[in-house]
Amino acid sequence: MRLQKKHFVELLAALLLLVPAASYAVSVPLPIDGATLNVSLQLQTQFLVNQAGTPDGTGSSYDVFVRRSRVLINGDINQSFSYLVQIDNPNFGKFGNFTGRAIVQDAWIGWAPTGIQGGTVLYIDAGILLIPISHHLLESTTNFVTADAQVDAFRFPGNAFPAFRDTGVQVRGWALDKKIGFRGGIYQGYAPITQAAGACASGGAGCITPRRNPALGGFVNFDILGSEEGSWLYGAYKWGKDPILSLGVAANYQSLALKNAFGSLTDQRLLAWDLYLDLPSGSRTELVSEATVYLNGNGTGSANTGTGISASLGYRFGFIAPYVAYDYFQSAGCDAGSLSAGKLATCNDTVDTADSRNFKAGVNLFFNKNLNHLVIEFSDNHGQSAYGPASITAATAGYVPTSLDPATATGPRRAFTSKLATPAFKSLLVHWNVLF
Image 1 (tube, one colour):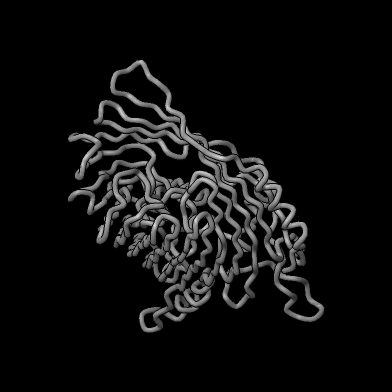
Image 2 (cartoon, one colour):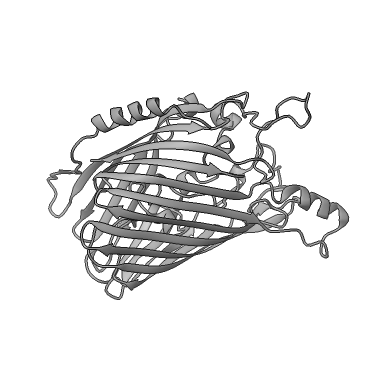
């Protein structure tokens, strides 16, 4: 892929001229003793170039869209309750698609029986909650090492959970002078409504979750050096002076929530271990690294059953932070000894169709820490990816690019597939985040 250097420089210069100097949340006074209310606005504009992303697959596609436009309202009541409501209009205008409209992204209230301050705090939350997938997926969208979340190494088939949220009830908090952070509970999970129309017949035939069992999930973070506990979300960069090292483990499970490659009901399982390191050197430099291993269990013969690894490394020099990142997913193979010839053929046709080998390199320009920053990111996308031709579908863009060369000299171009046998394709992302 060749990008016109002059045009890119002009675009970057224009974005820099539009960057405001500072960003702050607004505190709204309330006529209620002990109650607080804060209003924040988040805007993330993206310019995205995908190699071979045009309908005919022979050219690069160009998109300018609003990745996130959020209004967040949160506060506390009498040091015993916390609440948060967030409205978002995600990916508005991406691929020229303006059909999306604002949704309630988060909405929860938490009760802390012993108070919301201190070294040990226990909340009971209820509402629309973040699924406890891993440390990385519990970070603020304003403060990743990369431009956006790394989502290619773990799998929730069917896209049933918008932005990895679910309705539920959970306990959340920290303990031992903020040396352990935790959250976990009962969530709605998969349900028959998430299946294709007609898949769940009258009387229950073909239905997933036939007993309507809820999903279970939990995350525990062990702060080995320092502490990063004390708030709803984590963040990559700290701008602190003390090192932080934490080890986390997460687990999610739901009984009979999916169907395997042979149409039989199967459980959904996800187990994740992660390691996070923030190593400052004075006030102007900071090394940040995190790595997560995901064990995805979505049924025998599923392209989404396998091992995923997600890692990133960034180093901040003042307001500049270059970084690299990698996402890996490899589906589990087929056990010839336990499958019939027909099932083995089905399994072999299904696995290895959604593997990932995705590399990112970029630079973060912090104008006001994570409140106002610009990210320029290059990606090499091989297999399933949130970028490149893999991200362009009939549902989101109205077409599937014919990114693959003809199989024969006189044949037609072919639609993109996520198999690793297909070539890798590149993308360029310019991401501007402002929170105030």
